[in-house]
Image (cartoon, one colour):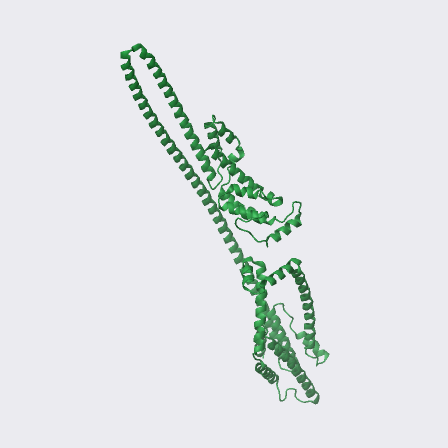
Length: 532
């Protein structure tokens, strides 16, 4: 008997947890409950009549045969419904229509979130542009939010009503009371308490129904069977609780272990990358410093060698000229010695003056070369991709050009803070402009005295603005940003700065730092051009 109870419980549990329950199966289960209730009531009334008449209650039909008859009736109903079930052309058209509507609605929703998909959807689908614009208007008006709240309230109300209907149906399909009050009390005491686990809950419902059937039919040893079923159900519940606790502990331990492992791996990897970055920065700095020193030494040696060669050539030329002049003077002195002495003295003074001028020319050439080297070093420092201080180069140029008023005046206009901190290169300014452009675009619709709401509204509306590209006309923020980006791509920083300086209000305040950095770069570049 206990084996039959377990088999019935497994069948009922499998039917309760089937993943593909259809509307026909729900109908069959409802009809089965009604049929079982009617059969049980009828059997109970027959048993009561037989007991009243003094006849044997199970004469001619046993509980097992009754269950078999119920299963046969249920199978017949299932076969009848299976025969009636079919596939028609109307269902096919309805399915295609529903699927197309869902796909179209999903495409409209996705186009509201993604700009690229929206362009393709509006271009290739008929009527898509009007649909997207309509839903955008609804979204801006807050219609979707109100509908979401109404649906949530309606869902809660429907859930409460469904719960009431479910309770009423359970009250309707409860097994009728066909026994006396004392027997009811005994049956209630025999029923199993409902557990919290859903599987055990279904099994408990099944066992309670079987207990009701056993109580309606006077089966021998039913108390022992019910007692063993209760004990096995309690053991099963205890075993499931233990397994659940063990699984939770094992999962928690595994999660903790994996967290510690990945945290250690992350920290070690971070430290390793930091160390590699510092080593690479140090190596690059040393490499550039050595390269700069070697280049400077090589240029200085080459220039000194050229100066020595030029000095030697000029000295030889002067010596030859002096010897030639001396010979000429001696030849003339033979004709008039005293008259020639004055002429010789005059030529000697001329030679002395030439020698002095040559020495001054060599000094000026050396200063010019040193100034050119310092200017070249300053230009290299500005053209580097990273900020490099050039205060040493400025000091060297001031020392070498102390006699040149123009260069001294130009160098005095350079701020010491800029020289100590360096300036951004054009590539850095271009990369930085990408961030400034997004911030300016987000604040492009904020008035000069706008508050927090104006900023939030500008941020939201900036998401739907069309971005312009190229050399476009107009004085709006998008046109100015497009022209600035175009001039930066052409490496025309001066024009790009002039264009960005046309902004007004909050956009100009956000772009002031970038404009200041660009002006510093242009001032240093202009100073270098003047020194050239």
